[in-house]
Image (cartoon, rainbow, N blue to C red; front, top):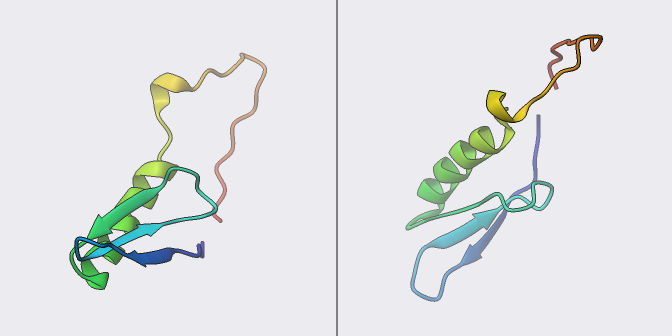
Length: 67
């Protein structure tokens, strides 16, 4: 999966980075490399399903796909 990310220099130093296609998926870092590493982790957590929040009806079919 490819996602566009946006780096914004922070006034205090470092960078804020976010993913426009994933609302609320934002992170930061003191360097671009750190910010990139942090946003990768934020994306993984953003896309990770929370089993407690998912309800499946008995007649639903569940499949996994790779994107």
